[in-house]
Length: 281
Image: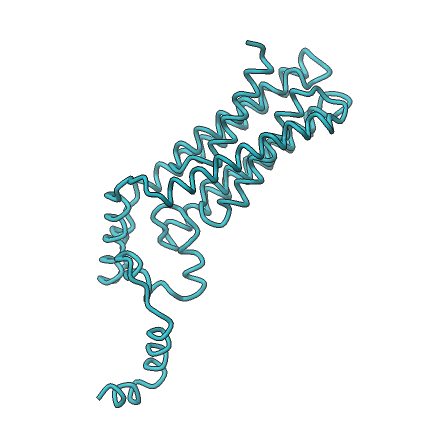
């Protein structure tokens, strides 16, 4: 098997994992596989070989190790953290968090019809993105090797589709997709440059991605601790913005959401408690 074929397989599998997989740890593993494939794409991409090639590959590999280590360690620590054990919580809030953690831990992994349809749709999106990337690489090679441009388009489209589909729901996939966009940009710089990028360019790209990785890891911590997101999704962030933590969290765990009439009645009661009590009597 040629190196270019092996590289494209890694990039394709990593891009599909961003779209299709649900487990956060599996998503990070797939993202690491894609990043390794992009590093291998640098080898035929550099016009100047020798020390410049070694410097580019070593810098990219070190950046990947640092970013993946930061994300993996943060994810492991946050998954082991129990929100219900944090100090300073009220009894009601602690009971709500305990029920939410129990529901997330013992939720059955049933293959319902809706989940199967959702998975099939994600696979279809990944297939369309792959076909589109192949077509773009054939139509717009931009003077670069076709295998390198195919890896670039596949990484770019997979990251973009992940942001569109999961960007407002899954914090882990959003972080991986943002970093994948920067990785595709770094590959494009190597492919389209007249010579191998210098030390300044390589260092700047590495610093930007490491800084973004640290910032995203800190955002995960805020989602977990401040907004009480048990699985690092962005739902509690929007609930907190709308002021629905206290009224809907316990109901959402049991699967019963208040109707519009109940919300209006509760708001009227809070605004005029004496009138609400008289109406009830």
